[in-house]
Picture (tube, rainbow, N blue to C red):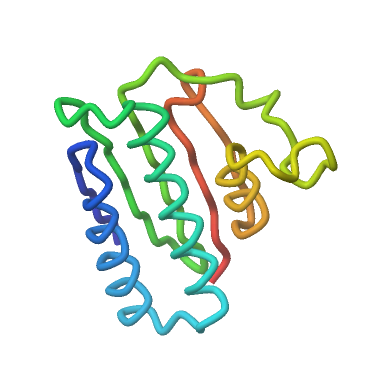
Length: 131
């Protein structure tokens, strides 16, 4: 199963992602803990793409692909921004970063998914969730 969605870079479009995750969860009997992990990580990925990648420019799109194969869900998010140095994101749990509000999204994506990779200079994130 594969589902693709193209969103304009407006934060209210996060509701569309929540709706899709709800549908996938219901269709594939995903348990509440895994559902919660998928929902939060996907919302973080798309929020980052809209806010940081596309800088809230409604002329730019965020493409999200949900792929279910065997016992895993792959979520690929692509923005039209300049990319970022994903290998040097500060650890939000380090004492010097505790009060910094930036950097928590990628941390959550890493912690809640079973695998996270970035491609095309950070313009594409790919998360894997074992179902």
